[in-house]
Image 1 (cartoon, rainbow, N blue to C red):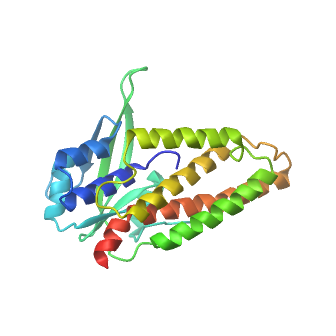
Image 2: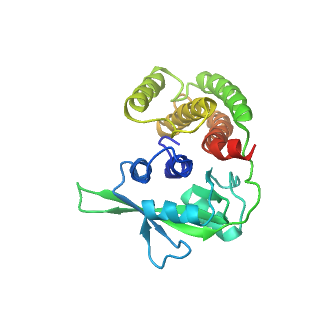
Length: 259
């Protein structure tokens, strides 16, 4: 969760396009981001992969009125509704987009191409059938905000006691650098999202960064097996809460429309 999921960009800017708040070209540019190209494969009515602009137009024509995000992990099918084939592909990718208004979903497959020193990223979104049912374990924005505050407080207490990397000045500096980059270089969410969704997503991304730092920078002072177990036990629920909050934020557009 250190970086913005591609499914989040596709859902957020796809929703803005569907609402008529951005142009197709602007939406496609925001979705692609720093990648070289995105294509969509398996769209009904298309015999070959197509570009994002055409794909989003085709989805609208098929009845899609909104896009939701899924960020599943082993044992936690967050945002998914089936069938098993789609869930398995989404779990392998650790993300997916589920269409609202048509029984379709999109799962990214990421490729690296080019010579050493000039590698670029290409993404193929596989369009697959999904089951029309409520997504698994997605909280409301209010629930996500409360859960984030509680999880962050509890995890910080435990990690600080164990002297775990991710709870000290270095981590705080990394978070501040991340915030500066975010404020300088991109919008947190696309136009059309409520301010609360922006606030929840920003906090969820900061929580994800802290979890990533704690995992990537070793065990800190947690040298015994019991202390390392306590560290994992502290990080697991906050990572899960952060993913739930990200999904709630990205899905807020569709939830607002359904009310």
